[in-house]
Image (cartoon, rainbow, N blue to C red; front, side, top):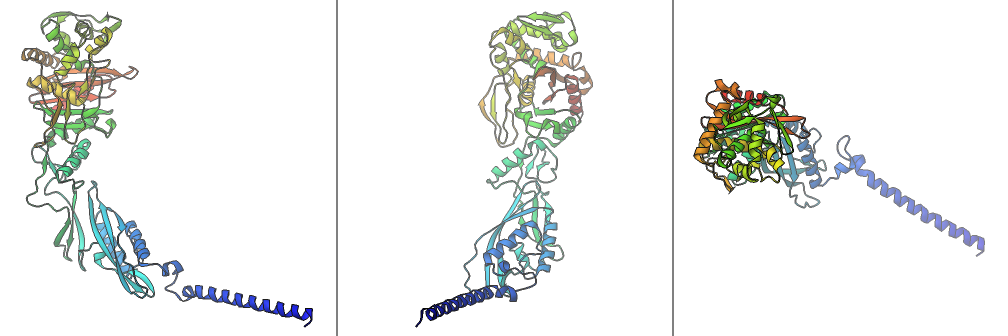
Length: 535
């Protein structure tokens, strides 16, 4: 055979091989595309037509969470969409989050299977309804879809039934001292700054089951008659946790602080220590600084300074003392408000008029730990653990210098007191005994560091001085508010350009403290106290 003929045979054989390969590729492409050409309904993608049961269930649950089953892989989209919209409407805007559970391995020729899922509905008030659901899946026109039934929404929901939601109102989760709802029931808006603490403790007392239910979810028949409560059911034996708070006192306190433009705080307690109200307005923030925020108390601290002087300084309430308009004590120059000068007056009168010069001089004559000892006698260095609350009463340490002692005598410098601590100080004056703050009936406050009150003879004189403040002194605007005992205070902070205003006192068996941040005067605090007492 000639070389040319051999070359022709080889080329022909090569071309034949190429043709066979090309034909095979074309055939494979056609076979690969065949399902799309002859597949399911209009707009059906190759991917959706080939989805596994697990993929279909996951896609269905994503749309379930979004709240729209219009495009969901379900055998009856119209019925599913209508029923799901009705269920979400009945649940009043609650949000749902699902998680796919078990999906059995399905043989290639299977026509039915199922999948489990976990659902969690979150309602207003952050109560959460959790349950396990089930999806039945079937092959429909060669593809897997969810078989629609009302049990898809909840496993106990039957045809002709629907969900119904109602607020938990029959039995409050937390009640006040008079049985009125603080959490649950009709407690909307009561004690807003304490809602988190009240709910947390209630949940812990209920076995750590989370945030207490704020709603009940029931399945009802076609006429709306309840068939079964699915969530939030209360039994006849359920009793609310009882707080020492008073809805009436809390409402009066909240109304008083809400009427002030700047940050305002009010804490009220029984002189026995039972908290009645803890109120802050929006400007004071959403953290309970009423209970643990530390501030310079200004002249409200003269309650402690006077107590120290009566015990350690050799004076009585009637002792004559100088009250000049200004005076240099050590390296500090103290001035009275607007420079008033009373000459020589009794300690009681100097207290009622809030003479800085008098009390700065008295403080400077005390031992270095004199003011700290007096502050401790009022609970300002005590440490309490109230269930659900983080609290601080104050921090008053021995002075490290004479100048520091003079500043501390008028409630400035390093002296720190919380509104809770200030109310505790007033309660101690009123009752003459150490006071343990409480929030709960039946849940005790742990005393990590307690205190002993000043002697009765000293407190009798302090009470007389605090009464004069409210009759002839800086809080005489409270004369028409009954027999009020108290002390005003103005305390500079930061650069000294601004000052907080205080009123600390008691009437009858109710002690309280008002603190207005940046009010630059104590008069607004006195006015706010009058509003609270009127309420």
